[in-house]
Image (cartoon, rainbow, N blue to C red; front, side, top):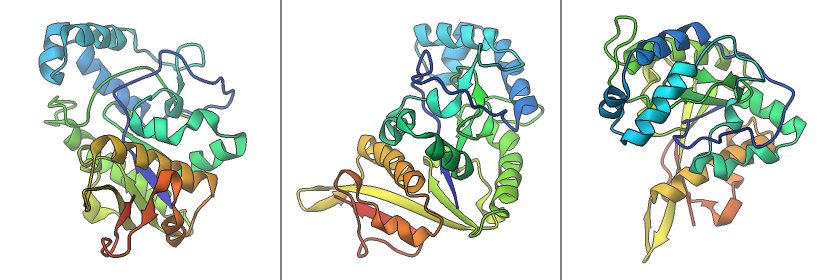
Length: 254
């Protein structure tokens, strides 16, 4: 079983915990190609390209200018400890034990506009680049074209090594679109999280993102390999809703 999640726009400015163990991202040569394109863009161009403020554009211009290989513990830190969005606040990876980090390293993958596909302990440097950003890299018209074949092939390689070829999609639609689902050689389970509002179940973005992190935490801490065990997910009041679930689109409500 492999879980996929999205990265976050919010980043820590330093690692919340110090881990000695780290790994190297698989697609660093490709990441260098992506960053080399962005290094050539001025802050005003980044602001237009990403739809961000002047202040954020200046920050990310600086990040891209400073981005350099090789990555070391002195100039970078582990991916799962850099992102600080709703998903990651739900997951709370900074509280994981050494054994839980090992399980996360086996089961969890983070999709990324710069790095393609990351393991939790892969060293990265700070960046902001959403997968949907309309930027051309290596004669590919956008990041989806640049990454889709690479990410899909890598996931298939890793899924082939699993006891059960199951991909748990806890990513946003923007990032999940970077995978060629027709070529994925696995069962794809997509959990959704809904809130009871006046007797009707609705998806609320903030809660849904946090719940994706909670589900990731639940799978990692319980070392789940059989997807049926995911139905026992009960963190923060959620439960599996059999009536609303259909096929491999599993709905959890509270």
